[in-house]
Length: 226
Image 1 (cartoon, helix red, strand yellow):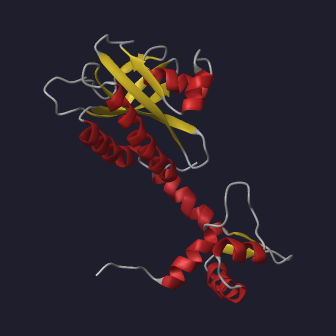
Image 2: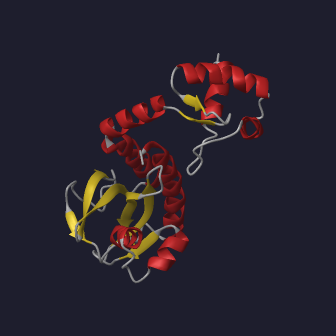
Image 3: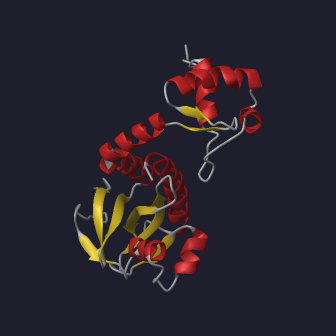
């Protein structure tokens, strides 16, 4: 039997989910509109949320997030291990596309292959974790430049497309796609990359890879603290 959760807990969490970036306070009317719950139900739930520090009620009657959430958020940020979250993503992307998947970050004037899942294909684009490469070559380099300092010549197009593609720039036999990974605050964190041999990783395969990578990047963005 499928576990459907606890209704009261889910309603309480739906109240906390109403607070978005830039909204530090919400009225009872706004909470009712966002959640679809009766005001009387919201008030009952808020009593418990206030008791444990998840919400605070202001003197004017509006609600704002409480200190417990900030404490838990600080604990999460301090203990966040990007590899734990990224490795399963790279494995899924590699298995879905048959190509190698990587996660690149900027390191000064270069990019580093921080985490890698190499393809199981006999002939593949192979790279070791920790490899340092130039920023002015390859899809991940162009994407990182576009999202960090905007100095890539194709910055506007890359940001408009939401991805970068390279065909044989660093290695004439290799093609790659890269999509940005942002944190929950919208800040750029790294590049999610899929690369393979040009003869096999053709336009149709790249299009599929971009869609898959975007979906995974979106999930990662919800896990990375801002």
